[in-house]
Length: 302
Image (tube, rainbow, N blue to C red; front, side, top):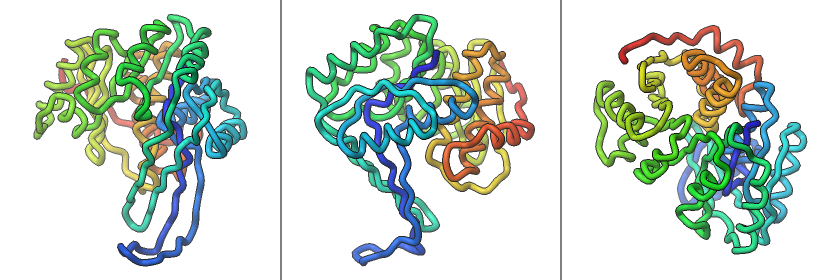
């Protein structure tokens, strides 16, 4: 079983504009609403791949009901912990470029945290737990560590700062920073492919089992204790950057949970990320399979 944890889910409210001008009253061309949050994005790609993930986290108010209803419509299971305050609403403005305004999130109270930890009772050591997204400001900074210790499950964690180093002793199945985030983790500026590989290998030496570094238009690099692979970027029209990284995580965890080789898991990860980037929402299985045929990976080191 694969579980996804989104402690700070959202409604992602997308407004498409002809143009943007500061200080003016503007009118959008179209509006869209999606159930948002990085763990939810992972759950969507897992569902499209044929998995039946369970969403965990905190949910509240009318925005929370919207999120739950959207997941139900998609046939995705959830075991969210109800809270008194409202789930956040994030605004995404699209007008040739993208501007995002993300809310901080609700206050989560002590009893609600206790109720959440009770929801983890069914998770077993051979299950997978995908931990991703920001923590609400009211949760303890070691909240994710407590979740990992409580469940004992195999896990991936998405933290784009040096704090991720504190999780490596737990041996995460996957870390997936982009190039900038990898630099942030080690508080340095990365300027070459050799440096990317060097710092990705450092994550492996500290305990990570697998690392994928996404490089945007330049593809991505995969590193484990034995191999280094490079995937070329796939040509296509960028439609939606939201969820592409989460789709890479979901694709890799799905494949590993099904017994794929690491190389094939990496290829599926690349296909999922690219397919979502070329789709208005999280990619369909048909789009993923179409893109998978175009994935080119070569070994560049060990």
